[in-house]
Length: 361
Image 1 (cartoon, rainbow, N blue to C red):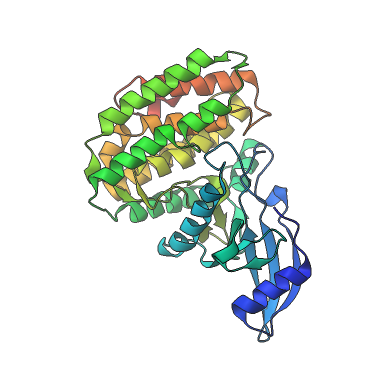
Image 2 (image 1 turned 120 degrees about the horizontal axis):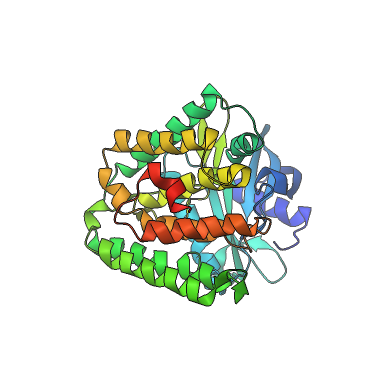
């Protein structure tokens, strides 16, 4: 994130929202509110801006993206992400609204795009607590509450509602499958980010996972009728609960349309991960929530076929949570169980939620 003066931020806010804007405060949002204890790597540093405009105090979040190996190497890559965020955030139910998109010049002045060097997106601020806080409480031995079940049901039904919106575009469905394998943020970007050797994780193992995922891409190639509205990065850090089951979602990623299994696996891999950290297998509260999520979604959506498309998406999410870059504090035993899960899920024609512990070895 560039170092930006209060004066530069205030000039920008006045140009965007009116000459009477007064910037009251600005600062980096604390890591504890967005990243949690396990997650360490991120794509940018969000800054909260609080300002007064026409007597009303409001807050917004200024986000940037730093250069990196996950398809973000070029300024154009990062600009694409910011422009896409601005265009698409408001079209997804419950997603925070994007208020503006702009850029910095070489002197860190925020302004219109003609002389852009880097891009940013300004999003609506929403209060709430990251869903990972609930999972963290359970992982520390907290009791499973009625509200935990209710929130899981609410999230699963939300996805069923989102995925009910379909689109006919065979080429776009194929592209999304292709990006699952080759996008810098997805499978090949992840395997390239692993060390040359990390304990039992070797280049041969990673290559075998890639090859198996590509076979799944061809298996799913002709299922374009499944192309649906998606969030694209639906995990606990991108869900903010306010009170009860009222929530907002953040940071939809990579595409408005895709395979519904992407969203289901993105969330439910986290129940598995937290349970492995706590117990070494899926059990207790996390077993309840894992099965409840899948059962609720299958009933609400009527999409029984999603269990036949989930495997490569679980592999993608498994590579994320097993990564020493993204989750550096995991034990080698947990990483081994995650890779067993990846390999075994890829090796069966249909994912069966009740067999998770068997998949984990």
